[in-house]
Image (tube, rainbow, N blue to C red; front, side):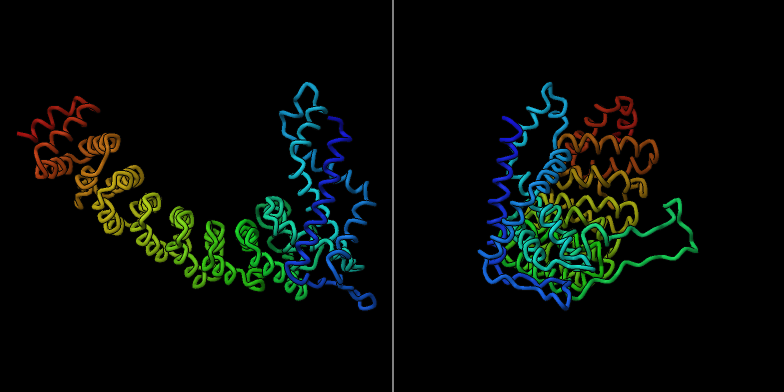
Length: 446
């Protein structure tokens, strides 16, 4: 396929997408007002979706040079290496472009939206006409559930809230990790959000929350990205929106969990409420995400992490229980008594996978702090272990005999008290790993 044909397909696809996105955004809710406008040139609100579509299409069609530039940039960024290494790279590139018309077109539309929004957020001469076109493209792209909107939308939304051109307002704070940093230097603070920009951004988030596709595929990820800016989080009511997502019928709330954890340090009460709801959420993936995040939660709120772990260890889903048991390893290192308190009931559940996770992640640490195994966790774990876990336990007991023979003798005694068959099984596993243990075991048996 020639370059002209692939490029023509994308050109036509972009025109179609502009019509669809602008129309769906206009009909979904009233478009937000522009954050910036000159007193002498007030914004003219579009009267109909048809008028706005015609205006957007007109500017798109006459800007062929802009289309070519954006397309070349996107293709150069996204062309896979194996295409570039092809014996006929140009032909392979055209085939790749033809196979990815939709994704390339959506990316190009997002770049058009960014450029139009940039023109509308020019503090010296804001173009309010381009504001309505640019923001409708952004909203329409998000409502469609596009992956491009998920990735590139949050920065555009933040730029709107700041009422500054995309790419001009976010500054990385200088610190001692920078060569030119000086402790006596003046620390520049980021400008505060613009009141009208915050209203516009809030309007966009409300629109996304009302559309089923964007509330599921876009809004949670945008809110997660917004957590890096604490000012915007408060002004855009990010935590309230996270609560609403959990309370709704949204299926997978993994980004909501990550966002709540990110906000734990600055708003612990609301974030804790979100995480407690997440640990009891009807969607299993949400509960699994909470279980896998217990260590991160504990770094900000240790008691909350313990409370969540208790809930998750009793969850009806076995994967949730197993994942949450991983956090026990940190307790084995930091607080042996608390580890015993939490691990013992978990082992008493007699679940093979749960026991295996505890043995794999925590028992070695536990024995390092108490080589006598005074809590009797080794026999308890043995009772619900599969063959591989029993082999690992046998190896740990061999190490126990080398470090603390008296503790090893106590362990063997506990196994014999359970029953001769249990002790014989333990002896068999130990001898498979180390036949030299025969003499020690024989003395204990006598």
